[in-house]
Amino acid sequence: MTSFIGFWLNAYYSGRFLGYGFTRQSVDVLPYLGVAIIMAACVWLAALIPIDRPFLQLVTQVAVGVVVYVALCAGLRLPGFVNAWDMVRPVLERRLFPVRS
Image 1: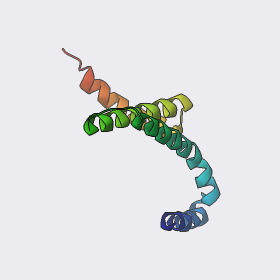
Image 2: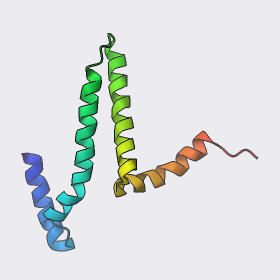
Image 3: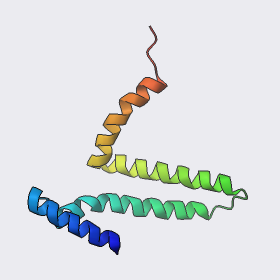
């Protein structure tokens, strides 16, 4: 509840000064919220896999969460993810595939 009130207050002032109010911000966040809910459901389902070792179960759940979230964001071409990926990709390419001279 406190987070919602804080979001509303911040959105009110940013809407007033920047023309980017509560409604527009909420609409912009909805796709990411949907992806997060789907990811959470997949992680919950992964928790139902009978794994005896808690560490392996944790690793499995984290891996499922990362794969599902990245796949959905990339598949839906969500702007925030695309921008972040465009910044991270060159760094990964340099580290994973260094150019040898």
